[in-house]
Length: 151
Image (cartoon, helix red, strand yellow):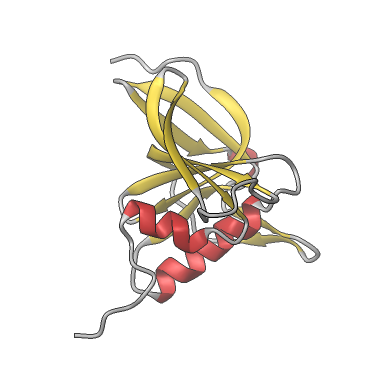
């Protein structure tokens, strides 16, 4: 299997459980805020969650899968708006299983989020469109509970 050409895109990426999540959106749409919120909620509820990269992500295809990896110049860094850049734990790469489009606001009034499938570099991926406040929606779609069960 040959890795296809590597592209660098303006996005964030993280791993939640075993699901690679690529977060796309315009500058200022809340990608970093949403990423930090997802990490906080998942980890506080006992789930594995780790940053792959913030702001610049390298993507490629390998064996029909979309692979996302950190950009070497900014590995282990995440932006905190109004504060600056912070260091954080990170993973080198992940297989992307979901693409999130972070929007300042959604046009849909009934549903909290909109879910579908789309092709990205020739790979079919589940996608969801949310606002910066949609962390719980993302966790629900991938099957990670935001409620910690005591047992």
